[in-house]
Image 1 (cartoon, rainbow, N blue to C red):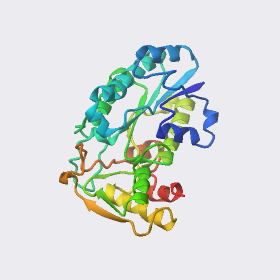
Image 2: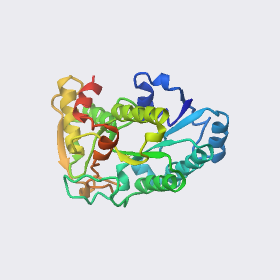
Image 3: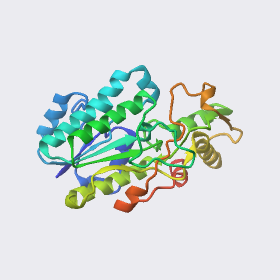
Image 4: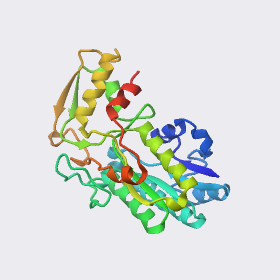
Amino acid sequence: MKILLLGASGQLGQSILSVKNAADQGYLIPTHQECDISDYKSLEDYITQHEDIALIINAAAYTDVTGAEKDPKTANLINERGASFIARQCKLYKIPLIHISTDYIFDGAQPKGVGYTETDKTNPVNTYGQSKLGGEKAIQATLDHYIILRSSWIFGQNNNNFLKTVLHLAREKQELEIIADQFGSPTPSDDLANTIVILSKKILSQPETVEWGIYHYAGQPSASWYELAVEIVNCAKEKGICPPSVQLKAVKSHDGYSIVKRPQNSVLDCKKIMNVFGIDQPDWKKAIDTIIK
């Protein structure tokens, strides 16, 4: 049995492959050229050439929130149509699916301190969120055996993410202006990857016991972008990675610092995945200390 990992070169895909004993799972890790999810025939050809696929993990996505506003066609092609194409192939070959989604399918109108549950109304406020919600709906309309795993504010050692951006800027500037009025659930990529591996093992070993559907998994505690940046910079200062003189300035998103509209509070309530699978939320502050070396 093989697991088809789509998006293996991305931040999350790299983290999945780095999980201890990940190789024992037997991953197929095609390149974009070998298996393009935005091209149905490319996807179909790859899957038909590998008859032993027992699970598909879709970690492939167009995640550039600003870029999605400029190029909605590409965002929708990958995030919505791509997910639809994968779902069609899963249905055809009776393959279960783990699909990664986002907190940006919500509008962020929740009161501060209140997290979104899996059954709360979706209402994305930007093109990226709309495209990801479209992908979710396509999967739900096509499949019975799926897990849609919503996460948020993913950061780690691989590829581009908020932590790496802050570290880069802290080496170049004396003052960083960081948005302080948007709140979410920072999530270490490695912890999310480990959760996906746990779910994969459950699906492959005991598929009849799996409670399929939508789950939230994200780090805790909730934070603003500013609070997250403070932890990153303080850790970097302690380890001598950026100058001790670097300062952070809290700014508001409506003062022109956010080009794209984003949810004000997209904190995810993760009780369901704990109750069903016994998977607890990671402490993102501990992860920062591990990642910054």
